[in-house]
Length: 234
Length: 113
Image (tube, rainbow over all chains, first blue to last red; front, side):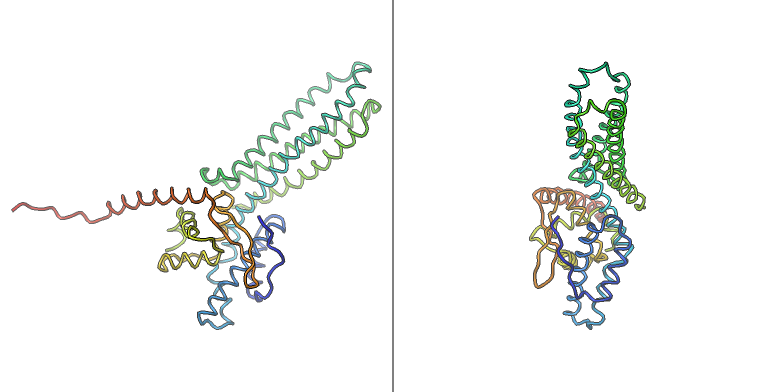
């Protein structure tokens, strides 16, 4: 979507009041709402202009355009499902794209540290493996849920039945999965630091930890948003 | 015609209105009114979410353009949108031909002299 640019001015107080009422009912980040409101504003201004050209007194033209536009709640309701879908899609794409990058950092960190581990005492592999299984499950859940989120918000919507609450849920599940995978990775690292800090490759382990921490926070915020948007859908 | 009557056909109608040329929201609404002979009279604001849905489905594509000091979001059909319109059109023609035939008063039974 191309950017709307700075908002038009001169729409008049009645139009701005109406748009504020619509905005107040829209969920999601300010950026998503700004584009929608800019588009509605230009539509209302066009309609008011047309009424003026047709002979409606200028003072009443904006009011007539607003009345024809529909109640703020009606417009906001219709947009809410759209915002939910586009937000869910965004979150799913981001989680799916960042997963392999963070994963690669962990694999690199583990491989670089592994050499040292293998040369040392027989290590906690017995204790480690169930946690790694959990990480694998979390990664699988994230990937599957993100793919569902992407599939149900794109071109396939032409053929799929409408399922407005599904995509935000899928994105939220992907968010929980990502939080699980990254959280477990960080926990493993913490355990390693506590038991055998000398075996770690410091630069790669630090890079993986920072990446996971950033993704953990991003996933947390996105999940909260997706659940809030989902709750706002009737 | 009210929004409920149009439900299920709005997507096809919007695609048809965009077929001749790209249009922005208000121009789409105007075209709807004119082409339907004033019969389609939706709350104008409701076309915008419908257009966003079509955009997400890849049937139209939108871009901001500025003309006469006002920025407008202009929509145009994608190739997939044209194909969807063709499908919508033939489905509707079959459906309306069948319903028209069914709703017509039955011809009087010819009695032989």
